[in-house]
Image 1 (cartoon, rainbow, N blue to C red):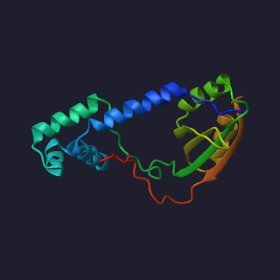
Image 2: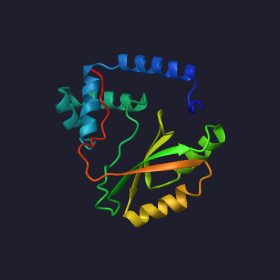
Image 3: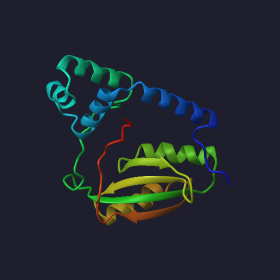
Length: 177
C-alpha cells in the first residue's frame, strides 16, 4: 500500500522552490543573527549587535525582518522536563490500521490535542508517524497508551522506545551559510 502523502508532489516541488529562494535572500549577517538567537534568544539588541559585529539599529531591523518574513517562527523557553515532573521520554513509532485520509486525519487531529506529545512527524518506512512523548513515569505512560492512543480507531500498532539518556538536544536548526 502507498504511504500517506500529506503534500502532493506539486506542493512539495513548490515548497523546495520557495525554500531555495528564501535561503538565497539571507546574507552572512542574517545567518549569524539566526545562529546566535538559536543559542540565546534572550539577548538584548545591543548584545546581539555585538555578537554579529553590527550596530544596534540595523541589527534590530534585521531581526524584525527575519521575524516578519517567517525565518524566526517564535521565541520559547526550553523547560527542563525533570524539573517539572515529566522526565520520562518515550519515542513512539505509530502504524495506522489503513492508509486513508480518515485514519490519518483522526490521528493528526487527536495528537495535536495531546499535551504529552511534543513532536509528531509523518514518516516513511515501516511506520507512518513518529511521536515524542513526555510523561511522569511508567504508570503515566501506560495510562497514555491505553486511554489516549488506545481509544483511537486509526492506530494499528505502537512501538515504544524508552530513552535512557540524552546525548544531544540542541533545539537549533542548521542555517546554511
